[in-house]
Image (cartoon, rainbow, N blue to C red; front, side, top):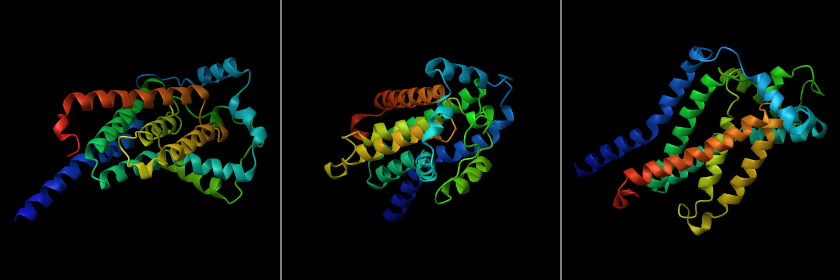
Length: 250
C-alpha cells in the first residue's frame, strides 16, 4: 500500500513538473490567431534598418561569402539544437533527482517562452530570408548531406508563426538559458563539468547559424540573449523566495 501511495505521489509530482510544457504547445498552436491584433504592421523594415546602421551591410547577406554545403549542414544541426539543449539538461536533472534545480530551470524556460510569445504579438517580425528575398547569393542554400533541405521544409511546416516569430529569437534565448545552467557548478557533479564548454560551443554555433541560415536579424539575437538572461534571473529570484531551503532538493 505504501508503495502505491508513493507511486501515486511521484506520478502527481511528474505531471506537475512537466505539465507547463504541454500547455505551452497548446498555447503556441493558437497564438497565431491573435498575431496582428496588437500591432498590424510587422517591424521587418526597422530590424533591417538597424542591421544596416550597425554594420553598414546586411549581416545575413554578408555572411553568404563563407557559405558552402558542408558548413550549411553543420549550421543546420546547430540551429536545430535550440530546444534539445535545455530539454536534455532538464531530463538529466530530473533523472538525477535534482528536483530543485530542475524546477528552477523549468521555470526559467516557461518564463522565457511566455514572454517571447507576448513579444511576438507586440513586435511581429519575420526572418530576413523572406524580407530580403532576391538579394542572396546563392539564392538557395544547399547542404552537403541534404540535412538542410530535409529540415528547412519541416521546420517551416511545424512553425505556424514563421512570419511573426523572429523578434526576439527564442533559439538564442533557449540556448542562453541552457548555457547558463550547464555552467552551474552547484548543479553538476565534478564528472559532468564538461557540460559547460560543450554547451558553450553548441550555443555560439547556434547564434552564428541564425544569421548564416538567414533566419534572424542581429537585433533578434541580442533580444533573445537578454530574454534568456532575464528569464534565468527572474526564475532564481522567484524560486529562492518561495522555496524553503530544506525542500529545495526534494
